[in-house]
Length: 409
Image (cartoon, rainbow, N blue to C red; front, side):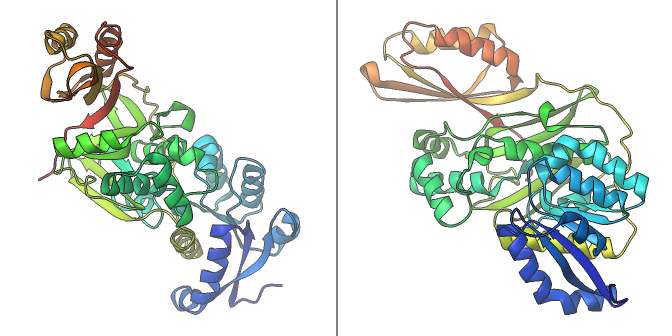
């Protein structure tokens, strides 16, 4: 039987984050007791090799899920809530895939489902959107929500390193997993943007509805041209209202210096929220690492110990928009001969795309043409790109990266 002065926590998972959470909980237990009036303690730990879920559930008042993945995490979370237990999770893929089912179960059973650590590390973006900005009509979110990729891009820009070398350094420092696939291909960020979009726009959003691409194809040359053009390259997640619908996407994008996310470097995360009521606010902080995530988990545990809180049912069902307006960086490997620039400009012009700036390097068969376009519909730009790629003087597949024009100065 749990003592009235004790608050029993069942811990599912004891990997990097789980072990860091257990250590932090023991370290801060007295402080939590001062805040809440009860002292938190680990009632049991479940891993692949030890512990029994039913036994841990029986002895717990709150369950912390840090095992990751979809199953058995989904089963354990649903069983915990059905048994009247509050749940804290850092599992973004679970929420981005089964969030509506889990939030409905929390409401049905009158328990809390807290998940601040699932998005942006210690940055309290979930709490700000759910509580502080609950009355704001959010129009758009931009986010750097993957610390691994932000560190890699920062090092590529700072040192001229290749993607592979910067990734290896991130792994050595613990910013990247042994298998970083979901980080570098954009899927991790897509799951986080699905969660943020659901909360900000009160409409169901699953990770399957988020278009995403990663940073594997980014080269040192891209970084060099970014410097020449005065731009910063980031992996950006965007969720925004467009013509009565909603677009949620993740992709590399160049930013001008006046954008609040342009200066976010290393393993830091940041989210910018735009609304007519507030104009723009930006939250930033460490986004990668076990201790940072553990800190966010403990914050959720404390919140769950001081009820109430819930995730309300969605109010709208906004259609998803796939064709959006964007500026583009375009890099072409071309033979340097008369009429090349005019031919490229002609194709872009016929597709209603105007050019903002042009840089040319090299001579002969090794020339390179770099352009930045003004914003245009993505469908028009990619139609033009396909046509440009078929021109006889283009020596390699054209490279394109989006450019975000907004600046807040």
